[in-house]
Image 1 (cartoon, rainbow, N blue to C red):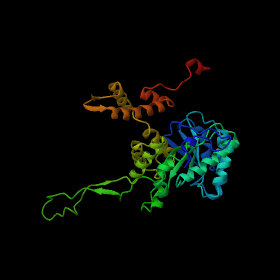
Image 2: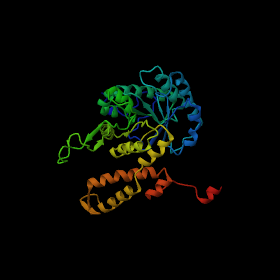
Image 3: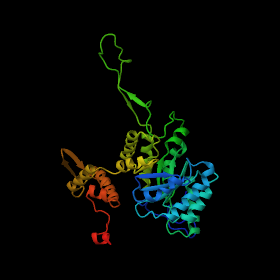
Image 4: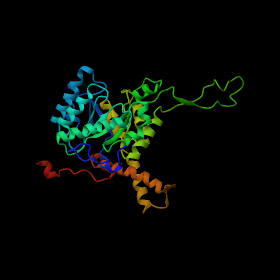
Length: 369
């Protein structure tokens, strides 16, 4: 175990000092793209500014014979693109037991480390995996002369990783967040579902048998209402707690059924309500869903502001619209207001919707010139 005194010391001579607080930048959608796909790569510059996170994927969905092309494609895109202040560039490297991951880290950090915000590590089993990446990144950052550390994001894709989620969340000051990886986790747990995220019609509860249905009617076999349950409720809730405990951010992962936008929005909203700050998007249609779901509604922001104003110094209790609001209510409302301020500072439309200070825009004379 590293001494708490040394936790924020660089792990290599010449490496930048670790961050003491993870930057709270908007990351409602982490949009995956394959850098080896020329058609997909060509769209990236036009997505800057409208997508919170663009992630060059080097792992799953990239065939073995395309790995090197994907890595080089990401380098080329990063060098040629100005991502500005509103869009982050992330990557998902290959798994730590793969033959490609070392070259992924060496190439990306030394060539485009100044552009990379976060490296996503798949199939994290325990804190030892984060320690391994942590040390390598420090050495590479020192070699590249980077002045800020690249952060690390873990994916929960194994039962062992899930059992170690608290230790993973606190393994390094580089930890930015954790995402749920439902497909691999389902397989590792031997869950009996072939879906990538989302619910399952077989995972349900059934209404109790009714009484007095009449002579000759069996209440057990008579039609009863069923309610589909969320396969991922426990997993997401535990992941959220681990992230909150260590001051990092939890994310829902992929929702594989691209066409079912209704169920996708429901699953995203469940994750948002439980505490997740964002999700993955696998198709452009999911970008707008994530943007809508992971931004609080204008009504919620207005209510939160009313509670804050009514509570005064934050102690005691008040009645508002027939409901009691107290210090616990205020804390909930402050979460909404902080998120609204953060999102509004990057998005003029949301700033107007939430009635917060909008980002600076050129005046009429400056725009004309």
